[in-house]
Length: 142
Length: 386
Image 1 (cartoon, rainbow over the protein chains, first blue to last red):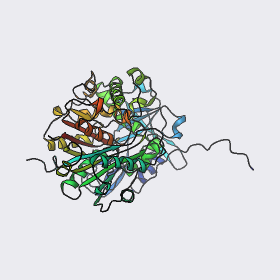
Image 2 (cartoon, one colour; image 1 turned 180 degrees about the vertical axis):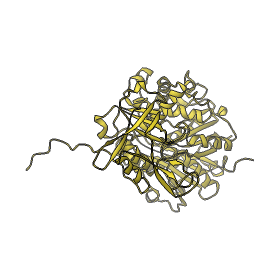
Image 3 (cartoon, each protein chain N blue to C red; image 1 turned 135 degrees about the horizontal axis):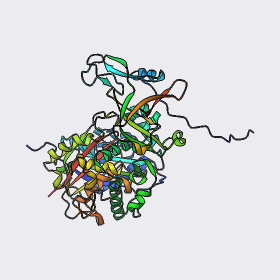
Image 4 (spheres, rainbow over the protein chains, first blue to last red; image 1 turned 30 degrees about the vertical axis):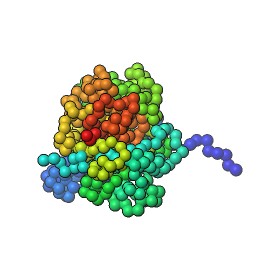
């Protein structure tokens, strides 16, 4: 009889499951770019991705690279890890940012202390590989 | 012209199990136990139920009610996928069903093993409404409502100067009310200092800003008012009721105004149907998944102006004996989390003048809200019929 394993398996990071609508967004992140869906008829950006433009109801869309700058809209500091994977990272700040491109992005914020945060503080989106295929966004000071 | 649904339906029966942490019963068993109590409270036979709106997911589905209660001719089976806004929104659906004659007695019920079964972060993955959050927000470390709603709370604090002292007031008053009820999970007094010393969950929310993960079942029966008048208990009618859905309903992050959600649309419709305003409400049971959520809803309901919800809850105003007693049973924060059906039950009890030590004197008109998913809202105005 073999001895029991002494090290439990490391908890797995929750990963996105791209859909047919969102695949270009995740492909963009993997290349270090913020790609956003735009209506092909009226030109408005929409995020998160979806099949129909809620402004003009067109089903045609194009994907455009967006600038990485934005300003803090709000934030939280996550202390309790609701998923075991994040236990070693807690506490971590998650910033909700008004991107210059006109949509919001929610992502971890690094390099700024929570007590220095205010609505309007400028930040910039950066990218971090978490698996061979998945790159996730985070924010740094602008 | 009076609204066609106004006062056409009544809450004819209420029932709940013990609220605990650590049951051996299934969610379905808890739901059926509460349902049998509600049916008995109304003076009905289980076979009189011809419509069911079970909270989903968790607990049973129509097939379970037919199999366990021997329902001979179920005419309506509905799920309302609005999370915490489900139960009060179900009052609207049930009222439509009994007012039109599709049903006579609709059973709304919840059975939950929120403590002994799947916990919150796991449970939410079952909701199709959380698919966007699962794809875009869970990978960056945002899973639970406490985290997703914390950004709205922080935004309110930054814009209006709301403080955690205001949050604590909601927690402390709610606990005081819970102790008067008796059937509660949290039965020891809570001080402001204990609130401030509790561990941080998702800043600005501490442990005592968050609702309970608990086990329990709850049920109410909605009957046509002309039929409910002949039943066992004093008549409590649904004077106004509405549900509302926010912009960007599947993602708080993408909502233009983090502090404006479904209730903002539902409230004027419900008050309009009832033909009354906030000033006439004697008692309110406000969905309290988080302390701040209560403050935010009091603003959207028009009890105070936008941004003034923090100061509004201070100085005894929301406590028994104050201008607007709220959550007189202990709410989700201190009684138990049955998705707010306990709020509907408590309001009915208040209007029957059957609320024991927590009774609001001469309560005639009351309001109850639901708040769920990523900001769906629902509100009902109930009254004690003359």
